[in-house]
Length: 142
Image (tube, rainbow, N blue to C red):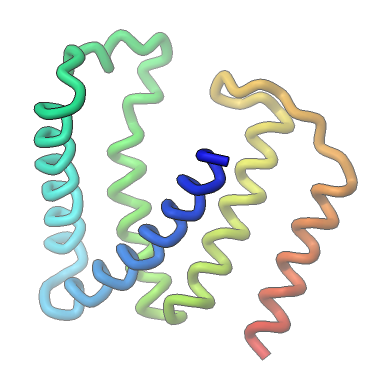
């Protein structure tokens, strides 16, 4: 139940953040906005770490596969692509397509066990779920 609540909160926050970032970009530029987003996230994380965590900040470098350290780089491009999609398509349609891409990618990651993820059998019911999502996007857009 806690996982469901956090997932719903994440979706809510991502939608609001995407619109906020797009509005900031309207008065500045793409990479200035992206820099502000990443910088303010860094400062927030350091403050929360100071009060809540205090684990060794450099322990992240102990990760076995150093490729995983590129999450922040990916985050910068996520911010860029979300802003561009919302500014071009609007928040609702952009979010639907983003969620579809996330779902398909996550299913592939699970089906093949990429990035150390436990393999999960991909069955026809998941394919039906993706098809229903696509149908919903088509219906929504009409």
